[in-house]
Length: 169
Image (spheres, rainbow, N blue to C red):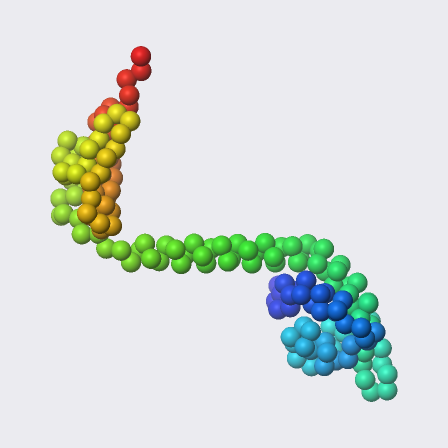
């Protein structure tokens, strides 16, 4: 599969720049700057996106034709797909950055924390039907209590369920 053009997601900004221009034609150098590409790629783009005109030794592309072609690209499936892909990527990167901070936290839980049951929860964890109250002295203490509670729930789920469910009636 060929590589996606690096300029594809810049089409809206490129259209804005082209609409602000008053010149009827763009030369190769202007296309290089607009698309942020090198000479050879600019010439290829000029040939495919705007037809292109040869004036002496200078290759030109019509600004209005270029606008029309870029507008069509911005309405196309490839552009929409790339925009959604980039949005997902940005969202995933933001989520990863948030998770990194949490992964760096080390909880100093007692060695027997993984053997906890609902009956031997540590002091500071109070569990009744419809209520969970945890007394803690800082972030790490709260995280330790939550970890110990989660281990107790895993090891003694049926008792936990009976304890927290309100009798109906």
